[in-house]
Amino acid sequence: MLSLFQNTDLPSFATLFNEINADMGNGQIWVIVVSACLMLAVHAVAVLGIAGAFHTIDQVMTRRRIVGASFLSYFVAILLVIAIHLAEIVVWAYICVALKVFPTNPQTFYFAGEMYTTVGYGDYKLTEQWRILPIIISFSGIFAVSMSGAALYTMMGALLGHNNQNPRSGSGF
Image (cartoon, rainbow, N blue to C red; front, top):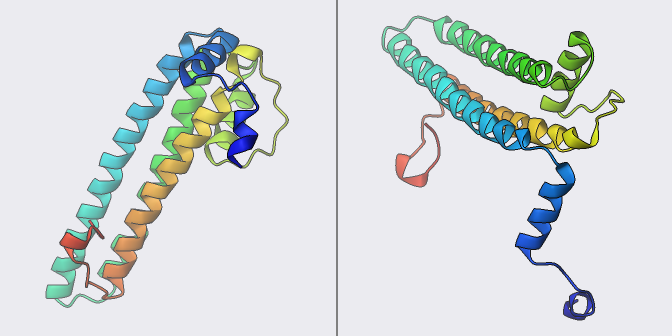
């Protein structure tokens, strides 16, 4: 396996990075990458807030023995998480509209939604300067959905009475 790489002239990481950056020819991509990071940070704070509120409500309802309230709060948490994801798709659509990636706004919204959810159903023709945009949007969607899934999983565990999460083990919120 090592001999496979010894016979080829592999570029250094810096050379590869510079070639890709030059090929894109688009300085706005770095603004989009920073925007994606900020969006993920906001998403994380929002999901942690929702999970924290759920756990607080669940503990109060369990102590007061109010049956069904925890299920209702879990349902509300799911709706809030879905709303956050839809809002992020709209933000991505606005970013793409501002950068004039597509000629029409509906096409831009569908593109943002498909890339965020990694569905990839549409056949979108991007100019060379925007070829990396689907990768950035899909990575933000993958990470955001993962965070949401982890939070909803811990909420479901609390809802089902599996409160055996040890903070020292690194599991749970």
